[in-house]
Image (cartoon, rainbow, N blue to C red; front, side, top):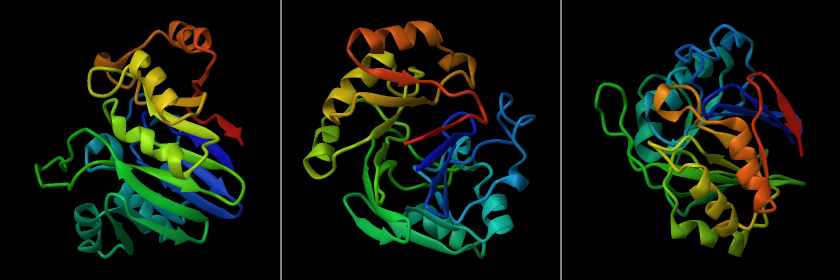
Length: 226
């Protein structure tokens, strides 16, 4: 499993020969738009955690460029199906066996609406069980006790958690979240893009290290392999 960071909460995940894209927000991201060309991104599936613009801005164009299937909650799936895009609707607690692995849509505490105010259903996260590795993509969320349910079903190799604070969990709550999901290997997201969520990288890494955990903060365009 190869994971590439495209800024904010956007990741490309390559599982075998399948390309999964999560929460594409690139052309509107001042930190990413000059580094990443969305026309170069490969996607067979696009997973959307919720409807906010900083998670969905480039979903339509990339889906139309690539023919990708958009996977999200029922309301978001309907929104894109009306635009002629192939979709797979899900809802909380449900799971589906895709060609790249089993995906479960899990709870998140946040809000969800499209830029025009249209209702975007309830926000969520994804647990992906690949052939060899399992990951949790929290999406935008507060710390929630529901996270404790995840390791009852799935042993995680990586947790992708928001750490920017203000709109989501901050570093301290993300450390607790990693305890809840029983995964000490964390990939940070949803930080630095806006003034409200700028963080001190070294301090964040130190706080995780002091708790015996590994926080990874990738540069935009950088990848890691599990």
